[in-house]
Length: 610
Ligand code: GLN
Image 1 (cartoon, rainbow, N blue to C red):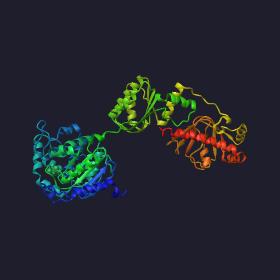
Image 2: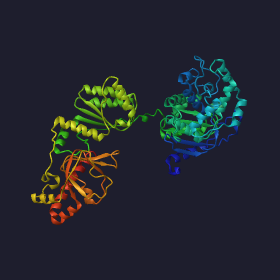
Image 3: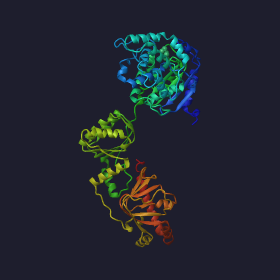
Image 4: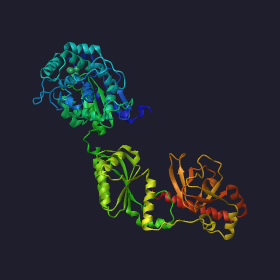
């Protein structure tokens, strides 16, 4: 798709032109080299958690990352030496002070958080080279993974800050004096100044933000950069401390974890959805890009991105709720059995679940299931549309299985193998208490069939149907005995073993139909048994393959004997002969085919009509 037609692109373009005219703020000049930036440079990039990039303006102009490096080095430190060790050197408390304030926390004597200079310098001191020549090489390598390309350092900006960075040196000496950093100050500030001088463009920053948004996987390159746990820690400090002494205001109005840098970059992250980056050098009094802040405020409002938005609740876990009165498997059943299902079907509840099931969803589900336990014998939970289950739901589900059993019912699952880890976790959890895993079925259809069978066995009678005579077959309804015997002369007996293929999907030259006289026939859609999807199971008395023979169209799927099957084959050639001999007979035959077809269609649309 040409991105010019995308509504998202158009939105960014409108935002860009609206804010380009705002020339308030000052370009940072305390690092002399930064003062050379043109205040009109302005780019906006948005990268979604699935890697789509939208950009407008100066998004390929390189500038130094500055403080946006802080959360990245913090992430690296957390993974390199562990959270506990990092927390011994830096707190996670918003300070309300400016980014370059020279104070430590009064109680702990530690830098307040890793987003202000003191905390960032302390964090940089924790990085060992580990296989790289210097700590900065390892840091740069990490940043490159975040951006998805090889990043370099702007030597001019580095030199400029290295020459003039007395304030940061003062902070570093304070840290050394209080034992927060052990290495000599010059080496540590050099690493810190270098990391701040990493060259990025707006697109790199948005990719970095999107990597944080997609749980630590760079959505453009697809490679994992951080563990999920680290992402949570990093986003938390970004949310509370990322915008320095404006952090409270920012979170109130924009509501996204963010980080700014004095060269004019800002990143903002909506977890699970997207990363935004803005580049515009003029800064406000807090050292945050003026246009960056207003663009983020506006995008957040327009697109409803604030993480505290009440609408950001997960969808309800129950997609649909039925009983076996309405929900039926693909097996066509004789009327007596259908009557049992209509009468007793409400003893089986079928609950289709969806989406991500978290604690709240699990709790809601337990209420739904237990609501009329006692009146139901089975509750089938179909996981076919579930994307994920939070492990905290495992003990809840296990208790639910037990409580429902105490009330006399049994919980069943279908499509649980789509979530093998959770399934294993539940089995393990229950195994520990020496209890069996609940029954689970590969898909909804076989689970429904199993439930139908239980109800029919319990509340009705299972007729083991014998072999039908031709006169009893659905195809001969309303024919005279003469016509039945005439038809008989054109039929050829067939039999199939259990599981035997009857018609394959690929042979197009089958020019016969089958009148099933005993056993059941499965019809599957799809080419192979691996990817099969049952369309119907036909009992004795029904006809197979009559539609392709009459319509001269190829078959939809393939058929297979579900039990031992006997049948009569009627070839197209015989059908044509019969038509010449006795058009009336063929007319009755076709009427009967239509009746059988209407039964099949009625069964298929049962679900659609409720
Ligand atoms: N290198 C800059 C400094 O330490 C980074 C500050 C910032 O971007 N806020 O002063």
